[in-house]
Length: 366
Image (cartoon, rainbow, N blue to C red; front, side, top):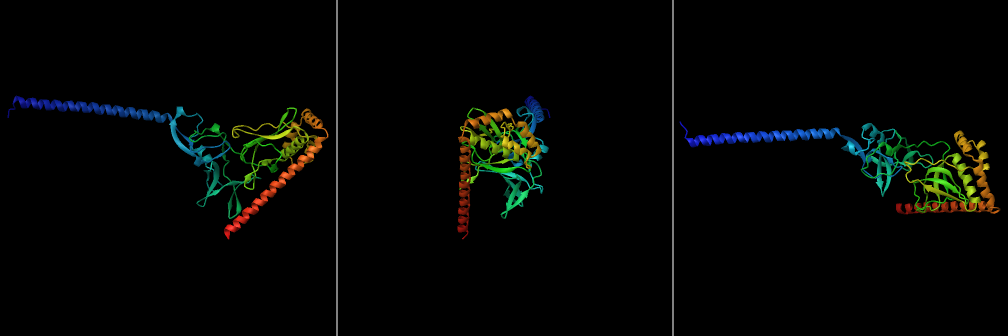
């Protein structure tokens, strides 16, 4: 059958249209393929330029222990993060604080205060630290159960906000090793900063009326005792070695005897980052003589005190004592008695508070 010219024209137009559609479709497919390849190349390049790191998922204070539950994993461009950002699993394992039995230690924040908990037997049990030894323990049925950690805690050097990229410069290993001569001492004769809180770190300094200022002991963590439900305004607890106790006693006597002197505490702004100051105070001749007779002072402490003993500096302090005249010993006796009275009063309030709590508990039980 011979087709007419109109049919041939329609068939040719149809074929041309199909061919054109195929060309356009091929161009579109080629363009999409090219875009997909470019996207894959960009994604590969971005992946090659990215790194997995850990960021904080909560705010952290300077000196606070960091546990693994406080960290989240993120992927960021390598150019946007510090070179020493922490991202490897081995390092993260160091934050997985556990006891010797494999129970994990986690952190919970209540009213702005971070508290450690031991996850044991399906429960979170508060992990506490003994004031006199710094040993960790939990309380079960009113009994202390000591906990031995498998690793040394990791501590923040500075205060950090949530989403801070964690780097090795921002952390340090805590050291809870306590020597045998460490004792918890209570003092109520030190002028305290107005906003001093439990957990702050301080230097104890002695300033004289002639302008000299000496560091007596350095970088001590403070505990403020609670009396009758209220933080004490005058007393503080710090852990001291035998030689530091001797040094503090000498400085207290000097402060009491010298008119216009002041024994006071200064607070570290970033205790995790700042190193301890070097003590500069020189003990009295009487205290110095104890070095050869006190068996509780370690040999290295004796050496440190001998090296620090400065005859010229001590003469300056003694001159200030002499300038106070006959009132020096009177001041010493008076202020010592005042210190004893303050301690007795706070002790009485503390005991009364315990008695009141016991009465309340008995009434509730009944």
